[in-house]
Image: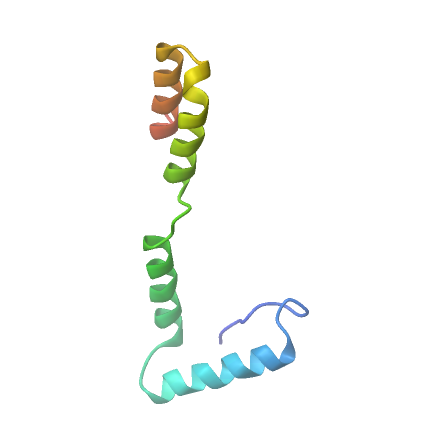
Length: 83
């Protein structure tokens, strides 16, 4: 069993197309869940808006308003949030 989302976020037409795609994957011997998981991992690997990138841009924007020590503490807190 596989879910394509909830109605009305996913239209009936879209769900039927996705069902057809999944059936094609199964006919080709692929596991649709594994294919979907691999696609998500690939998207994460190529993501351009990672937390680190956004945090770095924010930090660079603010760093001129802070003392060097405070800026260092903030960056360290972002890199090691549990310490």
